[in-house]
Length: 451
Image (cartoon, rainbow, N blue to C red; front, top):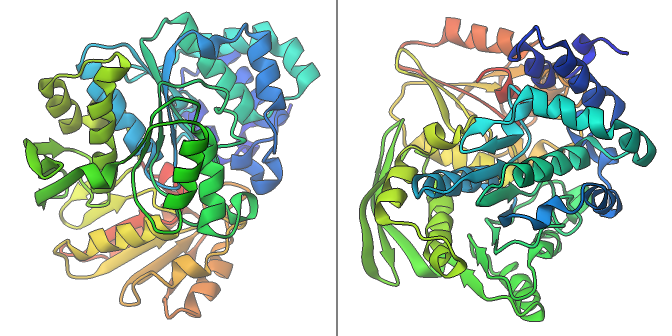
C-alpha cells in the first residue's frame, strides 16, 4: 500500500493528530484515502452524477438516514458556518446533535461530530472493517462512504437531530437521500461551474434539488436571478418557502477581531437585542440571518429553543460546535494574523470587504489556490497595494506557486513564490511590521496547513 506520506497534507494531518498507537485507524484512513477516488484529491473527475452508490449503501446499512430527524444545508458559501451555528444553538437547547460537514482541516473525524465531539477512531475502524467486502464490490467514492458512515453513526448514537451539509451542489449530492424536517440554501454564487453550470440559475437549480415535498425551505440570500428558481421548485414540491432576508434585519452592528454584536429585528420589530457571536466576520451576518429564521421555524418542527439557548449558542459557536477555519484569528496584534477559508468569487469578495474595516498599516497576503479552478475572477478582486506570498498547498490539486505568481502579475499583484504554505507564512511574518496584517487564504487546503 502507498505510504501515507504521499497523501495530501491536510489528509496526512489526520494521521498527525491521531493516536500514533492506533495502527488500525491509520490503516483504515490509508484505505479510505488511497483506494477510493475523491474530489478533494483529484478534482472534478471524481464527481459522480448519480445517487446510485449512496442509495445502495443505505440499503446495505438498513436505511440509517431514516432513523433520525435532520436539517439539510446547501449553498455556495456559508454552509459550514450555518450548520455549526445551528448545532451550537440546538446543543444549548439540550438536544443531542449530529453534525456532518466537509472537508476537514486537520483530522478526518472533524467531518462527523455529535455535540461537538469527533467520532471515535475505533468507530471508523469498525465500520470499514465490517463493510469492506461490500465496499470492494460496490466501489463507492470517498465522499459516498463518509456520508454513509455519518448516517450509520448518527443512527447508532440515537441523535435527536442531525445537521448535514451538502458536499457539492445538492440534487445529486450523496447527502440528498435524506428526508429532512427543514431544507436550507444559504446563497448562490459561482463555484464548481464545470459541474454545476455556468449561470446562477443553473447553479441554483442544482442546489434547489434538496427541496423536498411538504418540507419547509429557508433561503438565506435573495438574488433576482435565483429567486424564481427556488420559488418554482418550492411550488412544485408544495414546500413552504421562507426568504430569511425578508424576515430578519440586523441593525446596530459592531464587531472586533473576535466578536460580532447586533440587534435582530423580525418583520420590523426588535426581537433579539444585543446578540453576540464569535462568527465575527461581517460576511457571517448573512449566515446569522439564515440561522435566526431556521430557529424561528424549529418549534413548529418539534424542537423548542429558548432565547437563552439562542444567545448562548451564537455567542460561542466555535467552541460549542468545534468549528475551524472561518476567520481564524491566529494573532490579534504585532502583527494581526488571520486565516480564512474564503476560496471562491463571493467568499473572497466578502473577505476583502472585511479586511477593509480593520485598522492596519500594510497587508501581507499568503495566497494559494487549486489548479482546476480558473483563478482570474478571484485575482481581479484582490487588492493591488498588498504584498503577496504565493504558495502551493501540499495537495495534488494545488496550483504551482510560480504559475500563480505569473497569473497574478497580469492583475497587478506583486510578490514572491514559495515552495510551501509554511515557508510563505514564515516570510510574511519576517517582513511584516507590528502594525501590519497578514491574511492567509485562497483555498481551504492552504488554511488547513495553518490552523
